[in-house]
Every structure is written in structure tokens, then in C-alpha cells.
Length: 373
Image (cartoon, rainbow, N blue to C red):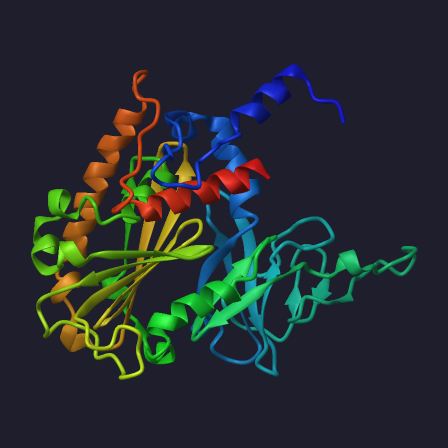
């Protein structure tokens, strides 16, 4: 395969090397956050090859129901549809008709079939082609490609995850998270839309993840949160496609009631902060769960969705989750300042704190790995 000179230059620009030894490693270069070609390459090389949280099973609560949505609108902008058939099997399908590309399902609700309103092509709720008017004379029809594409789907309690073309099994991520929070009754968590918010951050999406992935900044950026957490005991554990930050506290009242066989039994755990590659956060508190999804919009703008699922309302707004909105605003401010800084002609890259930035190092290594493949 022949590459033009420009293609070869662009290909080389997207080769990133992050040393496996954090003591020797440098961060991703500033160009990563500034290069439009890199931003576009992330769609195919990172986001299409990983997994995304797509909500919970209550979106298709009843048998024979559908729920259309757009995955990462403004970035991937991929039209998908969740379906539940009469046997209560949930599927994630493309919402694009295999005839002329029209959207098939437009509204959520009860539906026995998926029928394109443009020319009447019909599919069952598994996405299998069933009927098409005026195609009697079409030869070698239908073929498997006339079915709606079906995407891999994973369930974790009530929560659903889809992969467009994933290169790893999401079950290994679920298994890791279950080691710490598997004792929680995830199906009993209740979505509270009044607590859910969206924030527009004027910064590259990866800078927001960089900030989330370390507690190093907590004493400097979040004074109120720092009063609650025991910074000296703050811990990061790195796994293959996710990592965990554990926030301990001296306040024994606002902590998890851990079972005796739990790995952290006897410790005052105020929060479990899970990050899942590339852009998902699952923040478990004694009151419940805050799901944070980081959604790239363009090179310099990001939408962050906070979705709250409550288990114990009496524990809301206490402990490490005392004022989530204030913490978010503090994060937003500092990330936007970093965004301005990395645009400098004189900033090239930084170094990692071996004791405090293991999560950022892990993230950068994964990004480099996926972009280099």
C-alpha cells in the first residue's frame, strides 16, 4: 500500500510513546491536545474500538419496546436503538435502515416491529429483515447485510454498555469493579433526574480525564473535599482497561457499610472512583452512584454528563459527595486553565508523579497503544 508524503507525516505524528516505567515516563505531548488530525483519529482508533455506557434497562422496561438514541452526539453521532422483544431479550442495533439509510425508530415506546417509514422495510426486534415492498424482482435478496447491524451488549446490574467494534471484552472491566462494589444492589439504584446535570467545559476531553485520574490536585483545587478525605491515604489501583481511586476518611459516619468478607472491611471508605477507558467514570458513594460520561464535542469543547442513581437518600450531600456541583465547577475552572496553557508554544510535555499520577500515566499509555495500533 502506497502512502503519500502527507499521509506518512500524519501517520508519524500520531505515534506516541509513553514509557512503561512511570519514573521515566513523560506525558502525552501538547500536540496531542491541539492536533485536529489526532482528534479525528480518536474516533476510529479509540472510541469505535472500546465501550460506552448507554443508560439502563429501564429505557426498554416493557416487552416489545424500543428506545432510539444517538451515541456521543456531535462526535461519533451514531444512531442506535435499544429493543426488548417479547422474550425480554435486549438488543442494541443500528437505527439506520439497510435500504436507503433512513432512521428507523424515531420515538421510544411500545413496538412489535421496526418499520422504516420511508419505504416500509420491516425488521423484527432482533434486527432481522422480515419484509420489503416492491422487491419481488430483486435478485439475490435478502442477504445478511439487509439485517440491522447488531452491536455487542454487556449488562452490569441494570446498566448497559455497547461496543461498536470493541477490541476487548467488557466483562473483565465489570469483574474488576465487582471486586469492590459487587456487594451493592445495583438493580435497586434509582435514577434521579433532578440530581443529574450536564456541564460544558471549554477544554479538550482528555484534559478532563487527566484531571479526574489523580487526587494530586485535591488539596490545591478542592479545599472542602480535602477536609473530608484523608489525602495521605488516598490510593490508586490500575487494571487493564480501568482504574480505581479510593477515598478514605476519618469521618466514620459517612462511609460504606462493608461486608466482613470485603477486601476493605474495617476501613473508612468514603468513595470508590472508577474510571473506565476511554471516557467513563463511576463514582460510588454511600448514598449511591454518580455516572460521569465525558463527551468530546470538538478539539476544544467537551460536554460532561452527570447521571445520579440513588440508593439511600438520607446520605445525600454528605461526606465526600457533599457538594458535587462545587467540585465539578472547581475541576472545570482548572481544566480550562490547563487548556489555555497547553496551547503555549513553550509547553511540550511534563513528567508524572510516581506516587500520585499512576492513573494519568495509565490513561496516556492506553491512548498511545490504541492510536499506534
